[in-house]
Image (cartoon, rainbow over all chains, first blue to last red; front, side, top):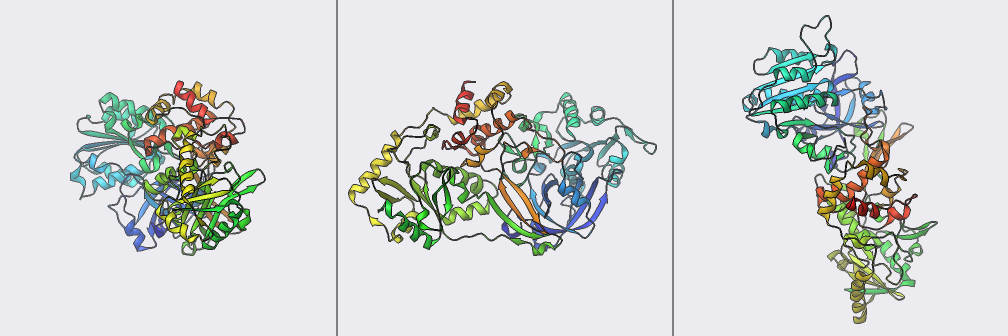
Length: 286
Length: 345
C-alpha cells in the first residue's frame, strides 16, 4: 500500500460507471490506478474487499466485483446507502463522474478459499446486491486458465424483480455457456420477463446438485440466507461445505480498530469469508 | 546498574530528559494527575497514586492525524502527517500500566498488519516504571494481583524506579535502560544498601495486596462463551450502565478507534480518534442494521472482549486490573465483580 502505511489510500481514477439497476441506486465503478506500482501491488483474489476512500466523506468497505483475471482495473458494485443512516461515501461516489479520483485501500480480508474449492463442484446461491464477490469468483473460475481446476459450477441467483438483477449482460452470457449451469430467478416477473419466477430457496430445492464433492456458497440478504441454508442442510451439505461472507461495520479493514468483531474473530481480517462450521463456533452477535 | 536522586531534585532529572527528547510524566491537574508532555521541568509530580487517564496515549494518542487534504484538489496534494520521532521518555508508569503496553504490542505490533504509529512511538520511547508506594493503602478498585501483576514489578520497564524515603532509586532493566542511565548525569551512583533496598522493595511488592480472585484464562474464556445468550445475566449486570464509555477511555488496554474526516472551509484532516464499543452507533451499518442496539449487548461485548475474545485471539486477558474503569464509572459498575459473578452464573 502507499507509503507502507496501511491507513493511507492509493489514488485511483474512475474509468467507467455502469448503472446496474432500474432504481439507479446500484452502480458498478471501474477504477484504474494512477500509479503503476500501486496496480502491481494490488494483488487480490475473489472474495476480498477494499476501502473506498473519499477525503471529506470517509471510507466504505466494499467487496471487489471484478476478477484478477481481468488485469488493469478493479471494479466495485456500490449501493447508494442513506435510506436509514446517511451513507456519505456511497452517496458521494454515486454523484461522481468518470474521470474523478478517489482513494483505495486494499486488498483486504480473505478471499474465497480457492484451494479448498479446487477439484470440487461449486454451487452458488445468491440474491440481490450480495452477489458482487461471487461475480468475481465466477469470472475467475470461468477463465480459460482456471476452468479445468474446478468441477461442475452451478449458479442460482435471484432478485425481487428483473430490473434489480446485477450484471445483466454477463448473466445472459453465462446462460449460453455449457460450463456453468445458471438459474436466474426473480420473485416476480414483469411483461418482459420470460425466465424463472420464484425465490432463491425454492429454486435451490429444485435444482441444487448433490452434496457429493460439492461446496455451496450462500451469499444473499439475511432473509434469503435464513431460508436457503436449511435447503442445503436438507440436501445433506455439511456445515464445513457451506461458505458465506459476512458484513459488519468496519473502519480500518486491517483488524486494528476493534469494530467488526463477531466473538474473537474480526470480520475484516479473519473473514469476511467463513464456513457455517466456523460461524457456529462464534456468538450470534452480527 | 542502579542510580539515585533526591526526590526534591526531580526537576533536574526532568530537565536532562527534556534536553534529550520529549518527556511525558505525571502532572497535577484540577481533578487529579495525568501524563502530559512536560514544558517546564517543575511540572513533574511523582506524588500521585495513579493517573486518571492511562498512559496508552503516549503510543496511541486520543487523536492521531493520518493526512491533511484539500477538497477538490488532486490526491497527489494530500500530505501525510509527519510523526515526531524524537526520543521520548515516559516517566513514572505504574507496573500494571507497563504490563498494558505488552498486551497492546500483541495487537498493534505482532498480529497481522503492523500499526506504524504504535510501533514507531514505542521504539522511540524509554519507559520509566515506578513502583506503587507500599506505605500507602491500596485503592479498593485495583485488582492487578488477579492478573498476576504486583505493585513493584520491574518487568516491562526499561528503567524501574522505587521510592526510598526522600530518594528515588532508578535501576536499568533493559539494554535500552542500561544505555540511557549513565547519560543522566544528574543521578548519583547507588550504594550496596540501595541495591538491597531495591530488591527487597520489589519482593515486598508481592505482599501489597489488591483484590484477588483465582482466574484461569481458559475457564473464564469458556464461561463467558457459555453465558453469552444468558440475557437475564447481562441485563442485570448492565442495568445501571449509561453507555457513557468512560471505562473504555480511561482503560490502558482498550484500543478501539474511529477514522474521521474533519473538514472546515475546504481543508481537512483525516485522523483516528478513540472510539468505544459502549456507543450505539459503534456498530451501526450504512444499511441501518445494528447488531448491538441494547446496552446489555454492548457491556457484554466489552467484558467478553477483555476476558474471552482476547484470550482466544491473542492468548492473554486484555485487562491489567488497574481499577480505572471502576474508579471512574459514574454508576459504580465494577468489571471485577462482573467477572466474579459470570464465573458463578
